[in-house]
Length: 334
Image (tube, rainbow, N blue to C red; front, side, top):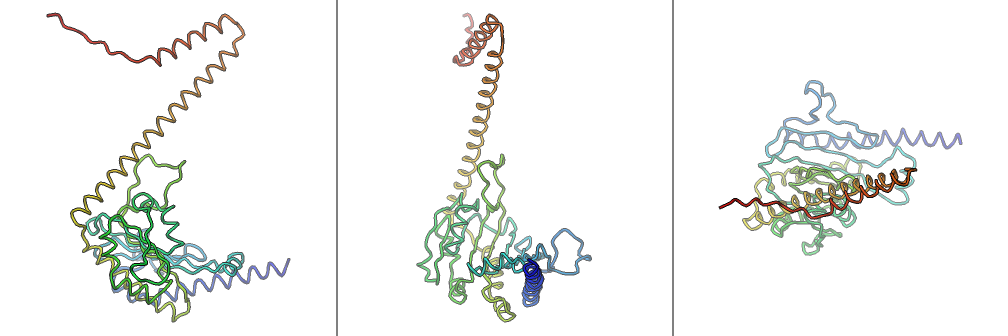
């Protein structure tokens, strides 16, 4: 038991130290590029600029984030390093049985005027299933997965897109060359004007239609977390900046824009229809509950005559409710 406790804590401190080292190495390898693209690296909007000492925030022992701001086209960029739980002995054992990767996720919040209304994503087979089932905008606007085989990229990838012309434009030679240069590194690329996160469960349906944000989300697998391996991910970061500019310039055709607007109107209409149906169902359940309670109270009355009169009164009231309502028309005399 003592040996087990010692091993657990040794693993905790070595794993914690290893994750911190990986995060620092990645930031040090890319800080110059980030500072060339953004006026401020490390501002999360929650503190004064003068108070920022370290650009990177440690959210947990294996999750590190920092915010970049001060660039045209976008409100800012959130960089999140989701590293393996090296500090958790159970996690280490699980990773040994079923290998997993450290991940880098970059989310760019675009300005409203700098992105057209469209949804596009390309994702690995495993992550594409999660996107289609759990992410609200994908599940709502383009849940159909289409194979990316025609683009001749290694691995098994699937594309989600509202309109074909978006896929054709985004899957350009620059992106395809990166897929070939970094096989299995690109996990997910997700562009959306309606991003609102995970799909709400049936018992958590919001009364208001989820308000989507215009975002570009990139998720990369860090296959090699050595100093050299982390430095070699710089072209992926440059690709992010390339797509920020590309999305700003990209405009839908007239036909595609019309289809996009129709999709959003239809989603809004279906949402309000479902909310109205849910409210009507809840009201009917409440009426039925009150009716059952009243019947129970009537049964509890000991006086048979009083019980009979109350039952008759309740039956009359129910019949009156069920009877069709007639409008009375007034006819003026000639």
